[in-house]
Length: 153
Image (cartoon, rainbow, N blue to C red; front, side, top):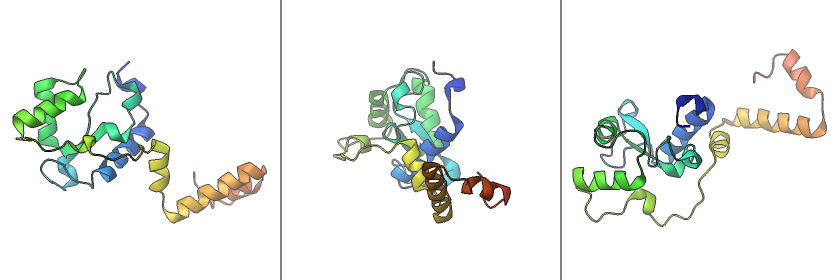
């Protein structure tokens, strides 16, 4: 159930982008912004939390060293949000600070489809709008655009 064969590469890429955007492209612990030093971490692991695999509210952006330290102590498989909270308290002097995922934010989590749509350029949005319009109108314009190599989807 938790293996990589269940992974959708497109959804994973979009999930990562959504987690990075949600966290302001920085580690919420160290404040690090070097993208080569950062990674996205599932609060409730991929292995058991099937519904949270692509939920950006189940992800946080942290420094790779912190991620490796956490996984060395707690493993990979059956980790829960509470384990990460305990890790922050014990190893990162979290004290009484609120955890970012427990802030009073009542905004619903964006789906990977919504994240993907938000990240499109204006040209890509216009092309998507045209394709959707063609599909609604059962138009052959789409075929013509393909033949003229105007579109590349």
